[in-house]
Image (cartoon, rainbow, N blue to C red; front, side, top):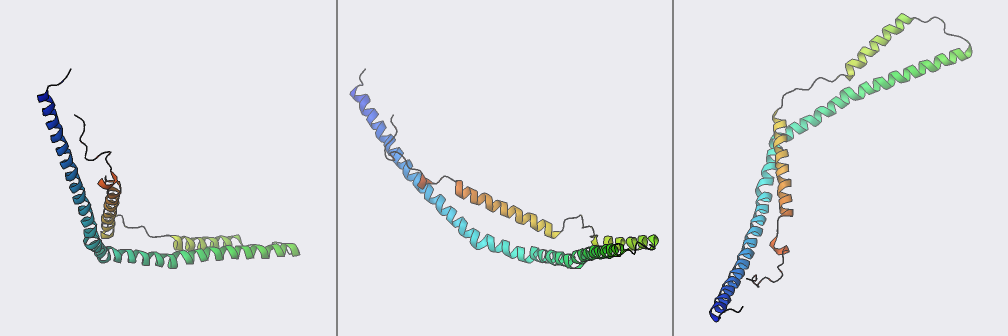
Length: 189
């Protein structure tokens, strides 16, 4: 089945129009890629020049005092509560060890137990137990969220948005990475 000359001429004209359209689309896609790259670059500049300093200033103004206060409080608790309590526990353990060693030496020397006042020992044990419990107890924290918690949540959201933006920048389709087999050849009709 052969085509008439008129149909062949119309098909060549149609193919020429398709090729022209294909070339214009390639140019348009190239320009769109350039615009997208420039927008990404400008967004990066905006992020560095506006967002990061604002977040940093806000952190320093609102969150930093709470963070510093938290660090100071934890140092105070560590130095005023944990270290003395641990020292008391270790000191008590060493005293018990020394008393046991002394009693072992007395038994080895043949002096025996002698008279042991169990009531006095029980009273001293209770006294030392109460002191250790008092030193080791930590006051219960407040159960409501303050400004520091809200700021921490906002900073977490901002960090998550930054991660999403970085992932988008990494995974987005980049026109420079796509190479057509024959960019100027139109698809066969």
